[in-house]
Length: 395
Image 1 (cartoon, one colour):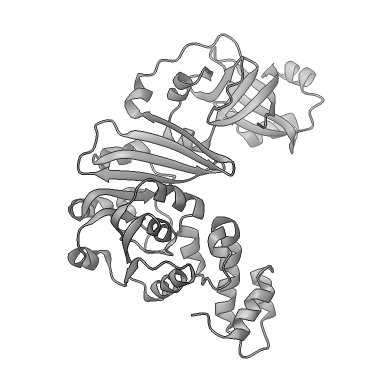
Image 2 (cartoon, helix red, strand yellow):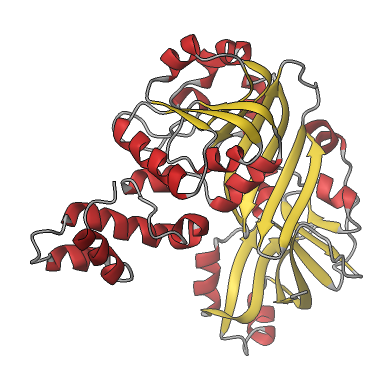
């Protein structure tokens, strides 16, 4: 699996270089398996941030790029594994095995199913490198596995989000396997629960209608970027599944939870004035759709029903998102902009419920990207368009 010493040495010597340049330059040593070496160099580079625990081992073997792009990160895999533990779990969509290895620390026995023999060989090898011995590997299809494997406490599936032409798909029915077609058989093979990982682009409420067996949903972001949405299904689902908005940060986890009914029933109080602080919810909260719930749970006011920005007079340290200190609020009028923003030449610009895009606003203001200032184009409760000038607070 690790080929020969010359190839391994070549990977070590060139793993920090641009893989395209290495490929163009080639290698004069006939003992070097160049295609394999290039695959490992590219894999290690992609794993440095995404899979640091894999990157730390020189003997880990990486598959073609597409498998690394589709797999979970070490951070999201650890979060998934933290949600449950028990005697047995079956990972029915195999892949590169990142999630499987994380689950292996929480379950006594794991069955791993993957039809690609080449990928199965890589994952078997990596399990040995990492000292994981409680996984049984099955090189077969989901259909064959379900007809042969025993019932497990839990099942995990990460359906492929690419069609037969390699194009990305999002809808539940377009993924492979189609969970809607396999749902009953999967439930029959799960003694307790099923976890399904879906794209962060899915329509959460539509999938809840398609999967009434859902007991909870976890929208997972890493350092402010939404990465995946997890649906946990059970034989006794609740009529009001809890939605968890989770942002995994280097200094800890930001967590907010609510239900769809709570969001629908929440009543916003009209905002009379902007306070001292401005809040921008993290990507998980926004994807989960907790637009009113977050204003109910924290002592903040919403600028407008459709402007997903919030404010308060006193700082709310545990708000699930970014916190800014407001410097000034400028009406979106040509005269006001010219007078109050003439000294601003550089800023980070974003818009929420505003007639211009961020790029259009940047061009209109003739401002360069970057710097310590943040400009938010938005709409207030009385429908006034404004630009809020603020500084990010770090705490």
